[in-house]
Image (cartoon, rainbow, N blue to C red; front, top):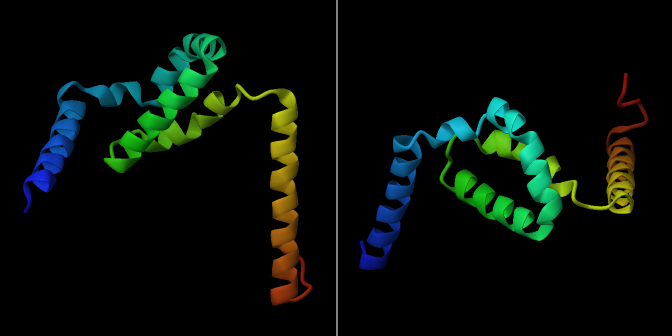
Length: 118
């Protein structure tokens, strides 16, 4: 093992160890985030770019190290994305429905005309 790989391995082990040693898992529960929801929303409204960047980095670290709480961060991503204006949100919903419709049409074409909803 090369020296650089050993250093990276030691950093990863130290990060995982610190996560559990300092009991940081308590911050990644739905209850903890719900209790801080107003404060998080106020900070998000005051600093939208910094909030999105911090969330992005935190999500990468937590999921990359397979730490507990990645599912909670995924569920809470809507709070970070809600900094978008209403028109952006409407476009995202229309875009999602359009893709769902195209996917359903492709399934009908591939597997026959029976309804997917029955």
